[in-house]
Image 1 (cartoon, rainbow, N blue to C red):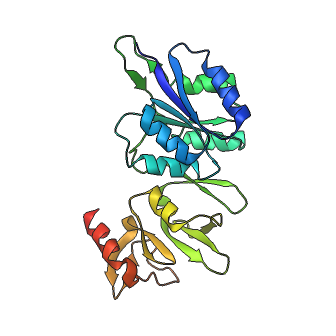
Image 2 (image 1 turned 90 degrees about the horizontal axis):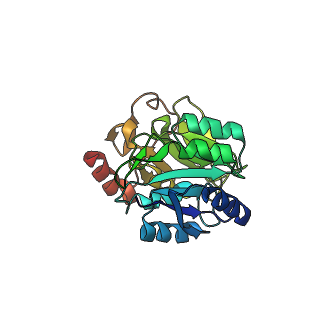
Image 3 (image 1 turned 90 degrees about the vertical axis):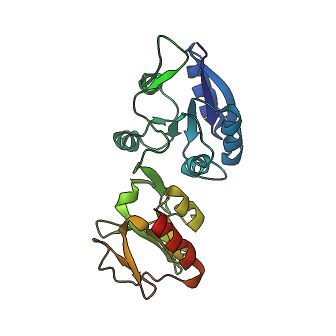
Length: 252
């Protein structure tokens, strides 16, 4: 049986060394390549076509979830993703409960065994069986957003009605189903937000809506389903974005 092909995308040399050392203990695993930026990681994944990707949450040039978003466009094989990060173990446990696989830096041997136990070689053939974990095309799966202070927040598309840009603070905010707003870190772009989910579409320079909550467009104003039917602000569709927004609305 051919070994499971693994790629590591991380800019932390000590974390790479630690993970690589632990992975050598498994004779059914082969580390095929390492990349230290998101752009290089995307190219490496497309070249190697690994079975399993270990991906850092924070990379020098982009978020780990941005890497996932870009890989969606070209992924044509079965690949699982394990995020790993230096954030607290309590956050890791919460993320795992949302059907993600995560590891805490530095990688602990027992924690790694737990993750790899979910990805086992079958007795016959050259395929691997997967029990859960992060895959592509999992529907309303969790994704990560980052606050201005660097904290992580795990959300699903169904938690979000729209994003709005606060020009006074120079950042985007998320409007959640519980009526609260969640600020995002300042370098988050509209393109990054739209890449998280196919139902997120920009309607204005200052607004991105979740098409799942869009009932109709009346006089260039978005009429939303509850709980976003009584928002205090007008979600207006500008001429620049109207054609693409309506096209997406009728296609999805």
